[in-house]
Amino acid sequence: MNTQSNKAHVISLGCSKNLVDSEQLLYQLQRSGYQVSHNSDHIEEGVVIINTCGFIQDAKEESIETILEYAQAREEGIIERLYVFGCLSQRYAEELKAEIPEVDAFYGKFDWHHILEDLGSEYCMEERHRRILTTPSHYAFVKISEGCNRHCAYCAIPLITGRHRSRPMEDIVQEVKELVAGGVKEIQLIAQDLSYYGKDLYGRFNLAELMEKLSDIEGLEWLRLHYTYPHLFPMDILKVMRERKNICHYLDMAFQHCSDHMLQQMRRHINAEESYQLIEAIRKEVPDIHLRTTLMVGHPGETEEDFEALKTFVQKVRFERMGAFSFSSEEGTYSGDHYQDDVAQEVKEARLDELMALQHNISEEINQEKVGKCLKVIIDREEEDYYIARSEFDSPEVDPEIFIDKTKKLKIGSFYQARITQADTYDLFAEIVENQ
Picture 1 (cartoon, rainbow, N blue to C red):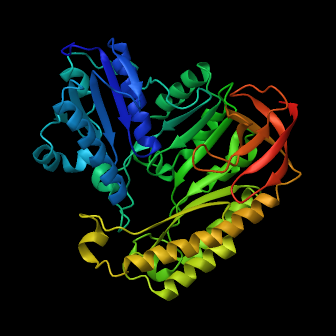
Picture 2: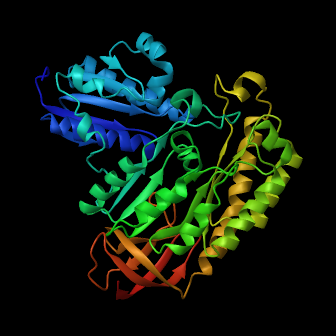
Picture 3: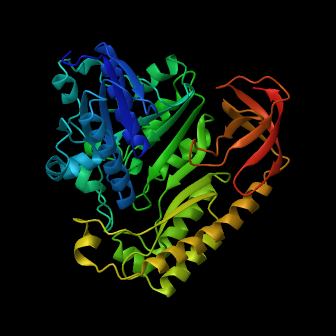
């Protein structure tokens, strides 16, 4: 090794897809003899490696602030080296090099293995999918593809990640088998676009077959789907979801809007009627499914009429889970290059608040409907007064949690039957009925 210290600290920003890359890097560093840490609050020596996000302006600002913080530490000699990779670095490497020369090297999103070479170590291709989990040991994120072919008007992801590239099915199955053998019970399938899986490798959308193969793995209790796309949605996955007991009745699909005008402006390749029909079809196939969506307000050209259509969509569909954000113009995107950002910031903020207030009431009503019901739950962690659990309808970190009184000793990472006793807007309270 070319450093005085053998400590390596990885700082991971952004989404769970970035987290998987960081976990793989941590494994490779540890394999090379480094003492590793992840998102440590106290770093006084060694190498710092920052995995950046560059999706929207807020994420870019957070990444830059983090780089500057550790660049100062590098200047002061607190740390020995500073490396930066990930989405922001992929897109703005030359600008970052000019502006922050204290960084030893910048890498893109897909060439981070060169970090090991620059540290005098060797990247092990045979163990490329092994990683050190930074999540609780009972669940893990598994990335099944990179890139996106959709080219929505506002989105910079294709500029960063390139075209959709599926991982071979056998590689994914092997990775999940190894994770389950190591104690993982819940897999979150992630990608920029799960829906497109297999098209480039096998000539057809192949997510349903992958789900079947993964659900056959002994010891896998829950399989959850994140980040699907409404246009060309693979309806055959719903039959698999309904018939396989270990596939969660949960689907994350960003609709973004439901005004024909806005959907066209956003280049979403779907209209309002098709959106309503798709949701109706999904709920018919899997009646108890919980749908998570993300919506956008303030895209260029959004009128009051458009916003009213979006509010109506939220009120009619009643998503079990919903997040929203306001448009920010990204250079290089179709919206950034061809549209004027003509919705005032205060209007964006007011619309966002109004939309989330609608969802606040819907979420509370849906939660109240669960009171008295028994759900299979997994215990995520223990706090002072409660165990914190989730059901199959709740993804970690983004969805409501279930609080269970500590009247019985429960095991982290184990499943139990719990009866819901109380509900508020975003969380549930429960008591254990029996061990699973």
